[in-house]
Length: 186
Image (cartoon, rainbow, N blue to C red):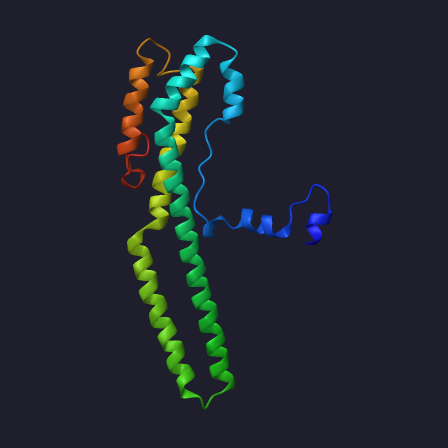
């Protein structure tokens, strides 16, 4: 490809893959890059203890919520692409019907496409991909916030029972449902 010959540029196929994550499985990134975390852990024992505790108490739940959010986001995007493709197909067939006025079957095809679009849209609504995406994204971002609150030792993590408090907060985030209005468990 032409981009491969230009230094510092990604080949076009890699760029396409990077920009179209909806066709691949979701990849959750850690809250803090592992290499950077290892650098931080060499600075103080207290920070090392905190990061090791967070790796067990918070990061697995964050990874689950982040992955589910990405999965639902990709599902919603794919659904929107199908609706868009159905609309474009209906418009093209409708234009063909206008050009070939004597072809009655094109009108039936437009009606069939409209019916399929309505059925698909209803099925899409029942799967609630957008609501589930928002729910899991709120959970993941709440966990990210708790991570940094814990590391910086700000309230409510400024006292001696901070580990128990973090475990309780993570448990609340696991069970919360942002769509029902419980978006802020604290």
